[in-house]
Length: 136
Image (cartoon, rainbow, N blue to C red):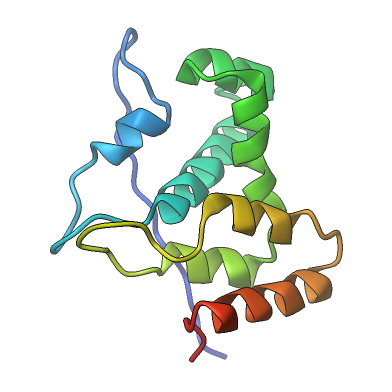
């Protein structure tokens, strides 16, 4: 069986500096272009979930305070954690873009995540990627 692991690295900053989504968009990118917004937010959701698991934050409200985000926005970001692992991995693998918007928005991905069954999510994800001609 093939090991398809993904490594995400984040730098931690001292107090007084935002760790929220605006910080992430300033992060240096490898190669040309920037990562699609949905990839950045997916990475942030994974990072925030990891902070909770490590005990660095108690809950989403704690993360919202740390990240200078509203609780509503934190909930929106964390909805991406509900995605099937293969969809998360695909989002994290989106290539950098040179300009403009990536065809798949965060909102459309959150709509996929709203499905409770991973099989239903995968069906919706397939429809979404085919609609935007991203399927292999």
